[in-house]
Image (cartoon, rainbow, N blue to C red; front, side, top):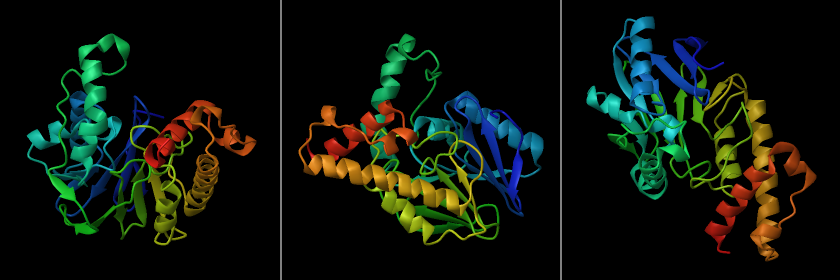
Length: 277
């Protein structure tokens, strides 16, 4: 489904799914301009977004928003900054870059053969130019957009984006549709269920949720994923409390129906690192 067309998911709100990684890019049209949600994986991919917006719409891009710090959602930031476009994102993205993304980026730049699918030689890590620390309403294109910094879940930099007059949420990888939720790179599996629980208090029955990868989902989908993550958190908390070594945890059949074993091992590493081995 990647590299498709702009699909209108709500009044004046669009999703476009790009390869590689089938990443969702959002576009919110207002009376005076457009706002882009997420900036993709490198400068060339970010430039493609800008070109596709120019080709499909007659509005200037007034702002960009990062749903979180991971490379496939924010490594295109430098292109938007160079164009003078403000970038909104969680205030901890700069710290997350230093702790997680920069070591990964440096490794690939120094040894490109280790991950030949990554085109990162031209990437310059560029944190948001407008850090968001508290719930904020912005109106850069003449249309209200709510930015809600979340507690640590998929990362410690997750930002929910709500377009209230359309009933649309962009949640990045806090919700996954094209595959199960992923861990590693600073994920917080124990806190993730509570993050979704807090969002569900605000998400309406008729709202549409755009995940970081995949097709739009509804509130019931978020409820199911919250329950799955809660099951995972409960089992890993119990294992840690029983002092079961990380490498000896036996995952339940219920978890293995949802996640590959490798994903679960990454979740264990996150949890044990945060709670102490």
